[in-house]
Amino acid sequence: MGVPVTRLAHAGDKAGIWHLYQAAMKPHIESIWGWDQDWQSADFDQAFSSSASYVVEVDGEFAGYFQLDLNPDDIYLRMLVLAPVFRSKGLGARLLGELCHMSVQSRRRLSLRVFRVNGDAKRFYEREGWTVESEDDLFWMMTRAGCKGRE
Image 1 (cartoon, rainbow, N blue to C red):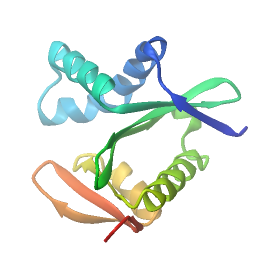
Image 2: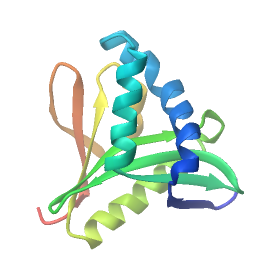
Image 3: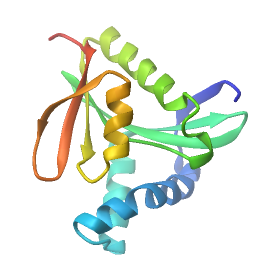
Image 4: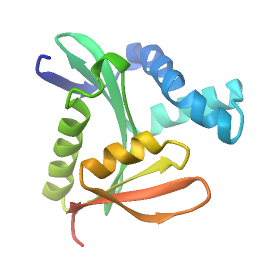
C-alpha cells in the first residue's frame, strides 16, 4: 500500500463519500431505526456542510474519508470510513494516530462514538487504545488516553 494523502473534501467528492457512507452505515442504521432515504440524505448533507470533511487517497485512489467537528475544547471524530479494500492494512490506525497527534498539539480532547450494534468498530478502536468513557442504549462514547488535550 502506498502512502496515504489526506485533503479537505470538496463538492466533487460528495457523491463518492455518500456512496461509502451508505455501504458502511446502512446495515447498522437499518437495524436500529430503519433506513429513511430522505432523512439520511438530508442528515448527510448537513454533516458534510457543517463538519470538516477529509478525503483519504492512496496512490490517487479514493480510500475513504473522515469528518471532524472542531470545537474550542474538543475534536469530535464524527465519521471514519474506509473502503473495504483498504481496511485491515493499518490505514485506519495511522489516521487515528495523526488525529491523536493533532488533538494533543491543539490541546483539545479527541472523542468519538460507536453504534452498540457495531462491535467490529468498537474492537478496532479498543485495539488502538481507545476506551469507553460512557454509553447509552445506542452508542459507546470513546476516548483515547494521550489524546485528551487539556485533561
